[in-house]
Length: 322
Image 1 (cartoon, rainbow, N blue to C red):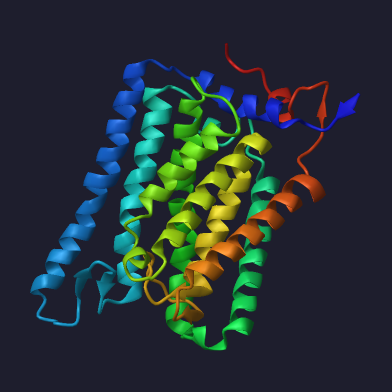
Image 2: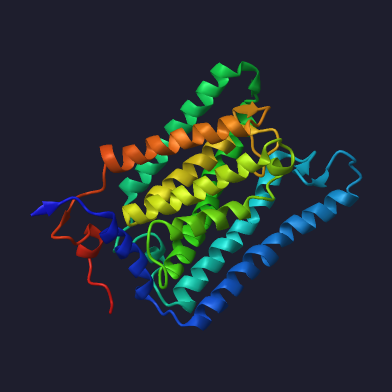
């Protein structure tokens, strides 16, 4: 008899993926130390060196401030900003694969294969939702958007963006909704506490973004970051895999970088449009509506594949090690 998967089964499948590896307390301590050192220390070296260069390059218009790099080619600033995520990704891989001795894919799915269809769904629908959010904002507030499209720089930036931004978004999802949430799942289970913790940790990471200090109503921006982290954790647990959250996050960051970026942004880019005003209220309300639509699409209109006899498809594909 076929039944639709319940979130409890899928959530258990996903959190139990942690048992595919070793979970001694010292492995978590060492892994967190490795990840933070690679990400925040080694990954910051390019930013520090480039900032030092800008201080002595003789150009008074270039530098590094609270709002990021100024007077610098967006492509160069983008490379320097992204460099830390290369180290972040490497540290997560080393920690999971060698310190915990578990398959790296277990951060994404408890099964043998990543559900690329689900990931594509998350990407496509959130990209469309982001377009609609910007469209209605441009209709309501016509002066907020200005065209900044420059074909040659855009095409060059586009090539590197589609390579590096998915990695950057994946790092955050693999760490916050993958490694941390599965680790906490050893002691905590449930759809209330885990998404709450994920939202708070993810939101706190973005409190130092440039737009937080340059915008009135920064508390609403903070609430938006919390909401995104909370929602990504929620859909990961309900769906029993990280694919939806990965697709959503990559779509969100690519849309911001390539289609409509802000004048003050943590991610400098060559976008088609520039948003001259950050409206925290419109952003928060439209985000809530967009996430609700996404949830209905993902779990009511296009739910995950059915399961047989209470066993999820991911666990039907393989026999997990004991």
